[in-house]
Image 1 (cartoon, rainbow, N blue to C red):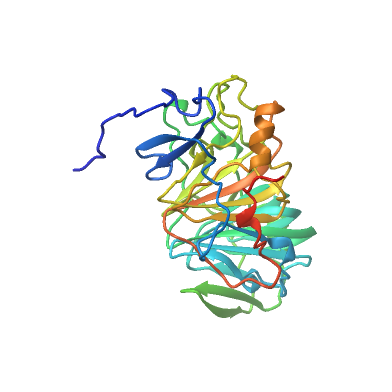
Image 2: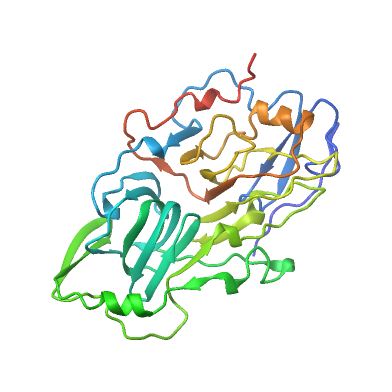
Length: 376
């Protein structure tokens, strides 16, 4: 048995309540263990903790514009890795045509976040329609393909050698954030049964142990006539998420956890009222989060804590340095506070360091590391 050391301390000029009533002319920084779940201290600085003027080394904060990554081919496995470690693989895939084959991920469960487009997904369990903003959860080794109504861009998040689960809801109960009744599962419906009538050969492109295998069948393998159980493919749209809120306290990202896998969590930031208490912080607080790498995929809206960030971009903040709102956003939150956010973003907190894959020229904004500098 073990537990964290516990000895609450107050040194110097500090606030009694985190994220509220900051001492005059100070900037709060949270230093925490285990993301936002472990012990933490709050420091009050004379200068913004992001006030560096130069950065040397590869562990800098990064911004990747996926809109500038040209992806060729008709299979999701043509999509190159963006960020990865032994527990997590992230890819961005775009397609404007129907898939004429099936794919199967033998390395782990997959979440497909539909950034753009709409269409139909057919898989072992049946048929799902999808649109922008849908999360589609696919159990490991599920065969699937998509038919496109509108050109599709999807963020693919692989839980390598693990699966996705719901976050514990604790005191707020099982219906908070999203009611499980909002989950829509794949159905054996008329479109699914109709697509079985193809008598052509079908190929399944199986990715397993990060290698590709091609399996050919003389029939359509998606030929299930029925099934029962509680393992299936399903979807959840961000529009069905009702976020936890506090008008007097800025909640940490962990309050917005949507899915949990081994070694990382997926959180969803959706429009919500901004804290109305005049003494409460109204933008994300400066923090270290020393045990997690933080990744944000920006889906749509006005990203209120970031400047010069557009939909389709990814930011990566490796663990071990202080980060928080950009100066422009921090100033606006004090001088002209908004009453609500209008951003939608997918956040991934990875417990173990993420590597950045080799990116095409121009995909990374290498000036992002300087974006916290005060503008004259």
